[in-house]
Amino acid sequence: MTTVKKRKQRPAPRPAPVQKSVLAEATPPAPLEHLRGVLFGPPKTGKTVGAASGAGNKLLLLTEPEGDAPLVGRDDVSVLRSTNWMEMHAVIRELRGEGHGYDRLIFDSVTFAFEMIGGKEVMAALQTNKDPRRAYGQAGAAVNQLIHDALTLPMDVVFISQMKQEGGYEDSVPLNPEEGEYPLSLAITPMVYKILTPAVSYIGRTFMRQVNNDSGKKKLKYGVSFQDYGKSPAGARFPLPAEVFDLDLSKLLELGGGE
Image (tube, rainbow, N blue to C red):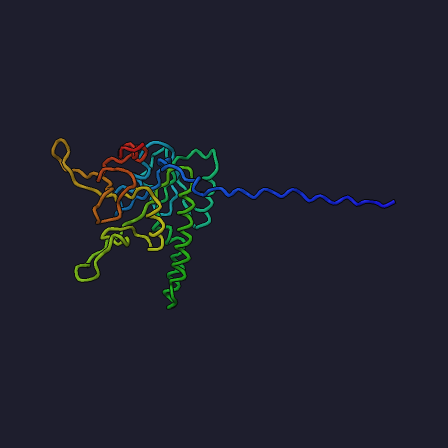
């Protein structure tokens, strides 16, 4: 008797995968959920006070000596004094979790953070007549990583920077605002500047101005410029007055007529 072998059935061909359209992922422009910005200006012009203004609990990540002095007595601000990059990185990592109770992170300041992270290495290279560009690059990369990680937190973030003033350009190469060159600018390296300034929704320059009160006496008033007309990188991605006094960051969107 002849045994007939059954032909092994071939599995049914799998349907070709349906390619998902990348264009289907497009969404309407999203309103700002959290405000990320920069306040910069000369020393003692209200940068830290402005960054801590308004409602909510704030965490001040401090690298600047005595930077928390203007906030003494405030019960809505807590301070962490960082001494190295790993500590700052750990703070940002913990803020990704829930239950920490903070509504805003204040990074005070980017200028001093760079010096803390890479200042010794840069100085050592200069003192030994070595090329400092490697040390500059490493410090800049570390600061940029902190900026990137802070900007992805589900909360408001304010970066503080000192101000540098350029002068004497009448007989030299003119400044070019399109390249980030302003008479008044942030005291940070170009590498950090190129990452920080495009990534935030507003940049404000702090200042003090002498004004007359109701009785005619002169007094100093603290303000923030959000439009310097080419004098500095101050500006915003949403409508804001050119100058704001008595800054309240928790009402900044309302001030600009936003949502």
